[in-house]
Length: 361
Ligand code: RAM
Image (tube, rainbow, N blue to C red; front, side, top):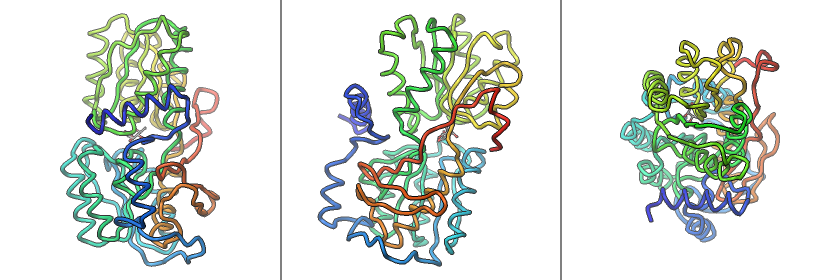
């Protein structure tokens, strides 16, 4: 079985057995645990010393899925703030396309050659990145994934925005309520290889198996590649192909904004419901003009901040990424590392006309 299918199978299994497993529940679990217990490969080697001093003067690099995506601009600003507060140097590199996998790999290799102390990476394509990330760890660099994970054996820890299961299920619940539990729906995703979106979509599909959704049919998953124009065209295409569509879930900030833009200028405005993951600043106007009722997201700046604290704690030897280790992330408080090195930021917020003006990101 290919790794990606194995991951999907694992996610589905987690869902049906209703275990609250995070994004990459099964990928490489055993191998990873064994390595760590052996004091094994790369940066996971050795034991954590929770009392070790926080090192200063480190270089921590952020490599988002896509630079110039407002979501990552906010997330990485949070990372920058925390890295600087901790007395280290921050840098950000990355591709402007969310599907330039070769470009992302080459950035990882460059950071490895530059011997940064830690890198925080949001994976466009986990399969493509793994070898390069392992090479970085072999060179003593701490590797944190944030937002979109790689396989567990290819990084020290994953800073997850929220439980993947919660996100997938609640998006279906939000849309189902908005369309009265009846009709055709579609998903407009980001890149076809994106770990985060694919995991959420697996949970959406599992949620849809519940009897209460028996009159809802998922007719298509489309991919807008986190490209505004492509996402807009994909939305248009969805409605041409499925004129009876009642709702769209777009679990990407780029996708939901483009879909809202299309719907709001079309005859489908207010008729075809749209939900998913968006930033309040991108979505405010579409909530106010009646295109969108409710959508959700976490605070991306906090995600970046937590990724920075995790990177520095790893590079200082305070944690190794093993389940059960705890560390303090500045003002954000104490976090415990979960199964497979997953650290959960918290619960997402649902935004609607009532509360959207309380948020500015
Ligand atoms: C886009 C990216 C990112 C995702 C958000 C919700 O900005 O795809 O990875 O977490 O949407």
